[in-house]
Length: 317
Picture (cartoon, rainbow, N blue to C red):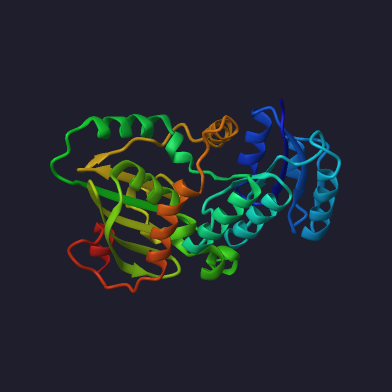
């Protein structure tokens, strides 16, 4: 039986992946919210969606549907709004007797998870998040291989993610620490989740550099030592990427061997939705480790470059 969905942040960058997932899993989108009215993307997926630019009217409409019985009420709220609103919109979903499927980061602070857990227990509904790298076939195979190994020494990991952004980024909510959580949260959290999913819990963390446009540090996990670097500065792109006209460079190596997972990204949200609807979604417990780590990174003082630093930071020293 198909489910009724509502979505927040429908005019944003990530919303089309959720719209596609809702459609491809055979469900109905009933209502959409975004303060920006550039919502023409809806027509590519659904043709009869009630659209709102004001949360109060969106809330009122969905509350009216709730009172009309199961056939009409919203069963899931997809949350694609700016990071700092995720917590409030997840609470809204539970209040209208719906489950939530929230883009990462689920929340900005670990204590927000504690509060949501209490609300889950009270409402009987669930809050799920999108940790799409956990359903990537190549990474699932890698995790299985790692789990079958008899690890005697920690692996050396190097994570590099450079995604060029113009001046608009720092002006938007994404450039505001209290709204996005900074680079480690906004563009790094799914990589941190993946690394802990593969190699275990955090035992030690260092931050070597932290600016609005780049950050880097070191993690010691149960089974790995990780040097990481995140940047939105195009000047950090390696020469070969610049020569090819690429604006993004992503690399994760294990003991100097590249993990190849560049393909297969287009359908990951649909897989997450399918798993969630089947009762196998990623919940608050799954989201917590990466949120705690990103929060700690955000609130750690940069100690400067040392022997644990990422090679890009060492070269810029």
